[in-house]
Image (tube, rainbow, N blue to C red; front, top):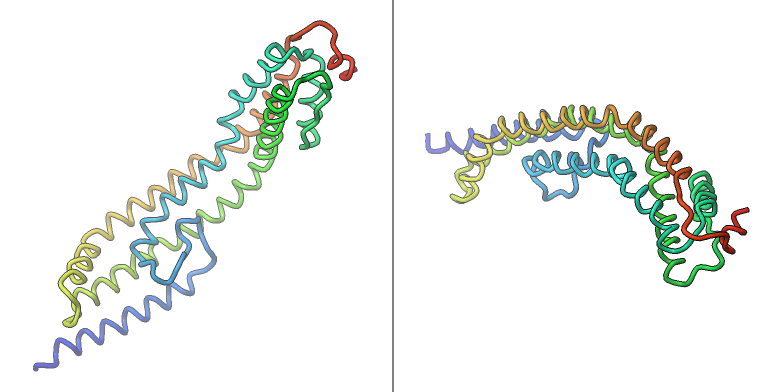
Length: 240
C-alpha cells in the first residue's frame, strides 16, 4: 500500500509522455507566438504567448496602411518648406513609387533639405513595398493562423497532462505543486481566450489586401496635388 501513490504517479508520467509525443507530431509552425522558442518554455507559456505573437503580426500588416495619410501630409509639405517645385516633387515621388528606389532630382537643395527629402522618399519606398506585399503576407498569416488553431488544443492537453503529473508528484516541492494546480484551474480559460485571439486576428486581416490596394491608389493620386514651393528653379528644370 505504501507504494500505491508513487505507482499512480508513474502511470501519469506515461500519459504525459504520450501527450508530448502527440504535440511533436502536430504539424508545421503556426503564428510566432505558437512556435516553440526553447526547450525550457512550458506548454502554458507557449499557449499564453500566442496572442502577443498575433498582435505583432497584425501590427506588421497594418502599419503601412496606417502610415499612408501621415506620409501624404509629409510629402505634400516638402515643396513649400524647401522651395521645391510641385512638378519636381511629383516626378521624384512617382519614380520612387514605381521603382522602389529613392530618386532625387533637386540639385539646388542644401544638405539639410536633401537629407529630409531623402528620408521622406525612403519612407515612401518602404510603405509602397509594404502595401504591395500585403496580399502575400496575409496569405502566409492565414496559414499560420490555421496552424495555431490546431496547436492550441494540443498545448492545452499538454498543460493538463504535465500539471496533473506535477501536482501528484510526491517528490515535488510545494511551489511546484501549487503552480501545477493553478495551471489546471486556468488552462480552460486560457485556451478559450487564445482561441478568441486567433479568431479576432483572422477577422482583422481578411480585409487588409483591399485596404492596401486602396492605400496605394490614394498615395499615387496624392502626387498630383503638390503645390509649387518656389518659382521655376533648378529643381524644376531638372524635373523637366
